[in-house]
Image 1 (cartoon, rainbow, N blue to C red):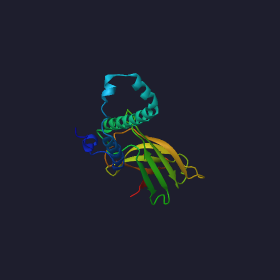
Image 2 (cartoon, rainbow, N blue to C red; image 1 turned 180 degrees about the vertical axis):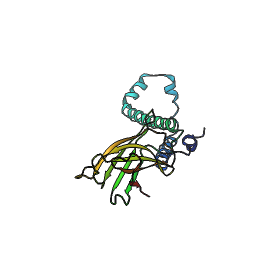
Image 3 (cartoon, rainbow, N blue to C red; image 1 turned 60 degrees about the horizontal axis):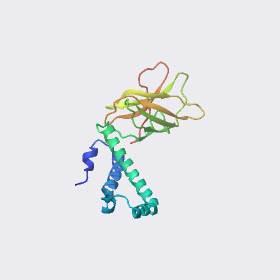
Image 4 (cartoon, rainbow, N blue to C red; image 1 turned 90 degrees about the vertical axis):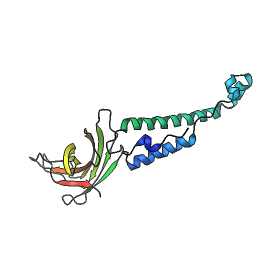
Length: 204
């Protein structure tokens, strides 16, 4: 029996980093191969001698059982990933995006980590920012999902203190993500309800 084809299992929509990690798990499972067949003694049933051998080899069997459990967990993870991400959204869970300041915020930096989507389709994410200025009263920063080069929808808001000039907050993208989607941070001043000036953009 030929081993399962990795490309058929995963498909072309998985990100490169996630694809490399899954490929390593797949190769280990293929190298392990199927479990060995039972010996004639085991097929014949237990004997006194076999019982004594089992007691002597109990420690070794525990190691083998642990290895088998690890293999099963890896296979279950692979199957779950394929089931949950087979359709693909163009982004792999666990992606971290680096953002850099624009001319409106030179020296600002941020990292945006995208967590796995939940069953309802929410994509939790966490942004860590440094180097932004405190805005006037009722001003705030918005993390915008960008699609086709334009701000598409907000994913969350945050403010910055004058002392820290940075923060780390949880956000959420309750949208069906698409290939080439990205994010920016905009500056929202009082009275402006449209996407404001971009202060952080993806690092090229």
